Image 1: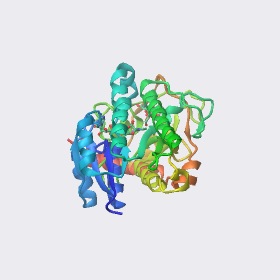
Image 2: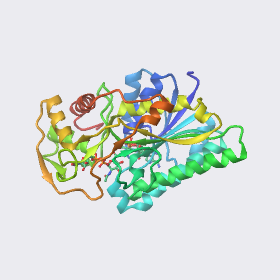
Image 3: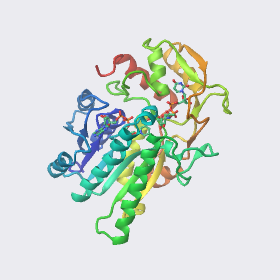
Length: 349
Ligand code: NAD
Ligand code: UD1
């Protein structure tokens, strides 16, 4: 199987770099296309150190059609995993055009090039955020989509575009139909157990886990807990945290599933990637303190705009059709986050 090449857009980023490790370990050739707008090429050097294998890297923007087309001609991938995109909700509200341009237009260019090169297997990074507001706390794939900010809408729009592409193909009975997995991630945290790669946010982190890790190491003075009056078990927000290694294994499972019945005649299907249960902000703080022996200085603060009280995945479909489920515990996620943070206090710098 080592002749199968997977082209990974955004492969130098947090999730992409972990995916490269698992792809190389599974015997795939890996080609990364990344414009390094939110990452450093050091991550890929570390991927090579972990695996003892080489990654082919192109510094290019997925919106640059000519460059992308040249890469496809040269590398002849069989499958694409599409991580490239922007992901900060707050920034997306301030600069919606930037988000639609990277996430939506970028995907249009990518799929156009794929179509022209007859590469029609795609795994896409979607998000639980596409579910928007519902009265349910456990999300199944059949819930309606209703994102509530430009970032979320960019993901929802891409999902629609990809469903339309696959549907058009099945109408014309293409002899090589699109096979597309829309993977809806819940909250990825953690790092590779080597501590060589991990999440390296620019500036002050928006997300809970990197924020907690930076308080623990003394880079930030105090965590603000956004609300303790939610209708949850302890009043703080509840999320479904998933170890980044479990998450990227879900992508390998999706590639394998392209051979299975549900994809045989081509299809576009959404799968939740989550554990199926949630932890509160206080659970995270308490477990972090227990696992690392550090004290997290925190203060109960006002709610953050746009936050929901509680949600977590129904991961049954991924188990049934992708034969995938999470294996790691919250302790693993925190121990690996701390290992990465303490070995790389300045990230990749
Ligand atoms: P990341 O920023 O670390 O990785 C994204 C990578 O894409 C970066 O290396 C960046 O340089 C690159 N990139 C961005 N725009 C590009 C472009 N136009 N051309 C080429 N490269 C480009 O983010 P991540 O956390 O690894 O997320 C990967 C994907 O997963 C994103 O699409 C994100 O929206 C999605 N996602 C992430 C989370 C999360 O919590 N991290 C949750 C749900 C979905
Ligand atoms: C955020 C994004 C969501 C994205 C997800 C990716 C927002 C509004 N939502 O979701 O679109 O898909 O990241 O993982 O940005 N918290 C604190 N203090 C902090 C940071 C967070 O108390 O400094 C709380 C939050 O209120 C929440 C929980 O911790 O209850 C997790 O927050 P976060 O890591 O930002 O993830 P989400 O809010 O789920």
